[in-house]
Image (cartoon, rainbow, N blue to C red):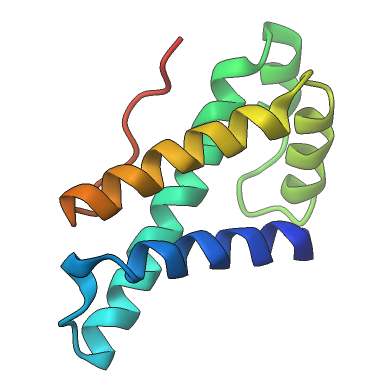
Length: 114
């Protein structure tokens, strides 16, 4: 993943973990929460991407095996083809971070609003 995106996700994760709901967690629980939040944010990005793809783009994505080293470059290529995708990602992740901070619950990301 792109280093800037990694840094951005890390800052969002730290923001979540600074919420009162996570303040009393021990080190091991905090690490587990960090991993769960990272997974939720990553899943939200992938779901958002998939929701934006047209049939031709979906076919291209499906042509690459999930565990293939070509998957990440394919995802980056497809994301670059979607106008304002970075803004959509930022908005969706901010919604998810606010939800996590407010509820203290780390659930799978909700369906992307259309």
